[in-house]
Image (cartoon, rainbow, N blue to C red; front, side, top):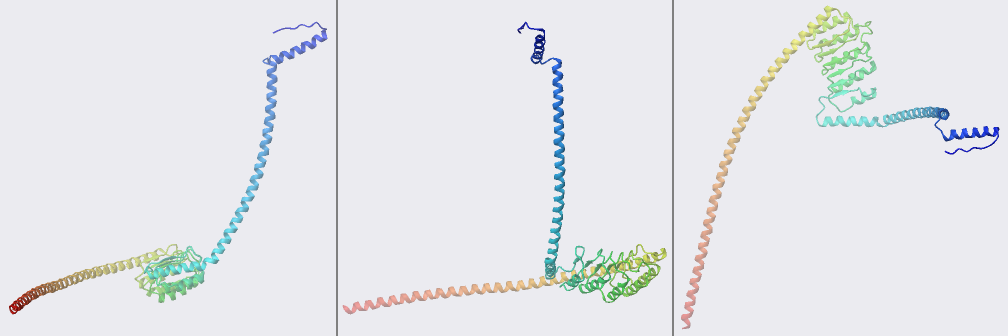
Length: 383
């Protein structure tokens, strides 16, 4: 490093010294003062950057909020439009395809009828809206029998009972479920008239229907029990949660005394006494014993009939086998005769053929002899 000396005044010396100091600071940047100054500058720069970043972040967040609000509004509008389109499509489908659905059901039942698969049809209206026109349509279907008809939990009123019972009588329904509906005491007369004529229904479920108007009109349901005294088709009855009282229990007991075909009754959540419940259970046990005895007797009779049928079948099979053996023997004999006859015919033919050949050879020899003799005679004459 070179040092330069100037000879100047005092004022000029001071300026020169300040310049030299500034230059020294710039030349030697590692001193403490310069470090602090740099730190100060860096802090200010970082603060500016932070402020800018925060401002940009706030602006971006505001833009995001505005975008999300717009997107939500658009999405809600899209949902509303989509729901409207779905509703319109459903209405169109329901209007256009009700007849098609009826036709498909009709064709399916025709298929069952033609292929003899209609004896155990389980039919439920759970997925269909029930209307009188629809029930009338099913009444007019070409079906002989429906085994199980489920109309439960459809909130059906008394206006539907007549149509349902008409369907049961036309299609020979064996099991009917009308539980959890709005059927009242007003439709009991229809059930009474139905059971006077019907001979196919053996299961009826009327659970959770107010058949006594909350216990105020319990005499009407007794008419149904009076009709069931002489009915021989019904075997299972469910009248739970129907607000019955003690008078109804007495009519049930009198019904079970007369009717020995009913083997199961559900009377839960009714206002019966302990003695009445005990009597009903005892009657049901008696009926079950009778039913078991009848079933065992029928089983024994069926076994006897099966044994007899098997014996007759074996006897007939033996007779048929003997007849077949005799026929086979006769056929064999006839075949043997035919074989011998054919053999004889063949031998006779062969003999005839041989004789004819011999005759032909003899005739030829005779002709040759005659010719030779004639030739000899001609020769003699010439001489």
